[in-house]
Length: 402
Image (cartoon, rainbow, N blue to C red):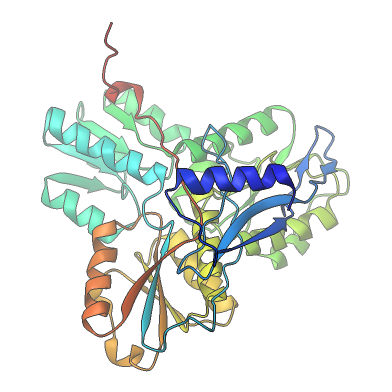
């Protein structure tokens, strides 16, 4: 390895409080960024290969070094940890991977509702589910929060929170017209996509949005420019697009998609429309990418089954299952320990456990307790570091002290 990278690795190991012994092995790998960027004319720029991180061989988890951009829109880049067949125990093992669970956008949205309950109490209304997790929603409902589908269910003058998935401008306009006190808990990374859409449409481009029809985030994004956005859900959809060659086009994506599937659709779009202008950085959020890469790390460690804690209406949770299944590992989405089928898992020697970006950690720990009581020994796996946090909306930020 080059000396500079050695220094970086040693510094990061020391910062993490990890000791290196004579038996430790450091393996350096490289990566190529799969999603190229474009310049203003739509030309793609290639990214050179460069060192991505390291793994401590022989340990029960890998440590990967990669920075998160300050604005929180980037992602850590994992390397694939390898199990050591000489030290792997024969008994049943439960590999619990990090990062998992709440992302910064979900934490922010939940904190918005918590703060409003503390400051103003009830009644408090939330348009749609604040995040796509049954446990989170039921907990808030038990505390007096009223979830509604549309604003016509909210009394005039009441306080209403817009969910993390974003809204169309017409929803905000309706709230203003009716005198509602509206607090926007939209994830800042979703807001970034909305702003990109508006910029491209103002520049005369038609938007192609990769996403899932009917998802709250897609509805909000398409509402930014009705008639100027076309939804694409699969590679097959690309062949059906009606735009003539040379049509000014730009690309945006839902933030919670399968990274691999999105790349395949984007490749098909580039092949058909070379002039397509892409985001400078992938619209798929850092947490979605990181949790999918963490699942791939578990697969490389030899898990025979993956359990994902998350609700069925959570797009990013469902994608985690798909990542494992596409790599040949069966996977099940569970809301919590009540959904465990221990009998069907009895013959699985190594189980992987993760959680979608809207699933609370207490549910993960409840699942861990059930599985450890049934005979699986927990082994933490750190696939990458994650340190992103978003500020609360201005209305809820504490005043600065002089």
